[in-house]
Length: 333
Ligand code: ADP
Ligand code: MG
Image 1 (cartoon, rainbow, N blue to C red):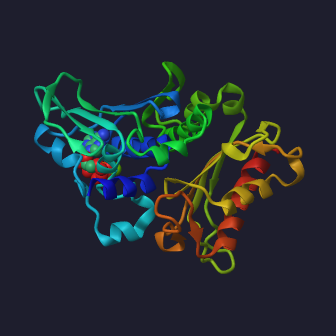
Image 2: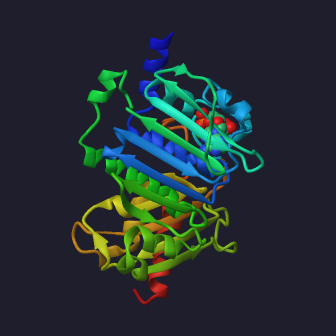
Image 3: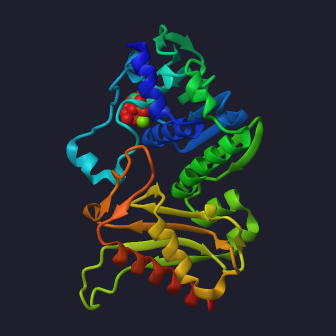
């Protein structure tokens, strides 16, 4: 049974960044106003996510690391609505615990003391008292220590860290009201203020030059336009000045219904909007939130991946392109 559990886990937990994604989602689900992520050696040696969220009562710690552990409502409608739903239901901690040494330490605000539980390669230890502040800290050490085949697939530390950075950046930009920080081998990569301002989150993550070059996007379909029925309800966010670019597309962050997604159609639409203004092989920065009715988007292309597909892709493209074009025009760009 252990073996089956490990194999299943290996398919779900691809790399350190997948663990970080699940832990950060749990912290956000817990209503945290601060989420501090720190990793060692790109996350291959250690991952720690600390939050000040609601915490886990001592008598529920064991359940939290068990299979199908979710304390969250997960009815079919919830899953269908899809984009709003985070993670694989009730299995993240269980799965991570199967392929690492996992410690969950927590204290709800109304508890006098904290408690912790450790799982080692699927072996669940006893709940012990632990001194800790309000909230939850999850530590993952030696990821894949007991699944050597999976461990072999890990890339260089810098590559694994890039993936972690992309994930944490994605959540930091989508949740500017939460103070999100990232540390690698004891050095701070970035820390957002959590003051609710998107531009200030961009400043923390990408620096001053980029933050100052960003122009606001805020677009809604014209209700009187021919057809009237647009697959997009709203496009908002920030995009950079056409001269503030990088040589990689990694800085085009797109969100559908507040969930970080990769969608070629969205990226291409953003680039189209810049027309010929971009130098060859240069890409702008964008943090773009696209709101669509849930039935317009298919999030189940691959349950563990971030890909989405749109029923009316051409319409979505057109909306995003118009939105970005309008923002650039507004600023004389
Ligand atoms: P899911 O998030 O799908 O419910 P997980 O395995 O990720 O499943 O987490 C299991 C349960 O553990 C959650 O439902 C929640 O009750 C609890 N939990 C996990 N992480 C946290 C956290 N950071 N703060 C509070 N509760 C948490
Ligand atoms: Mg979860």
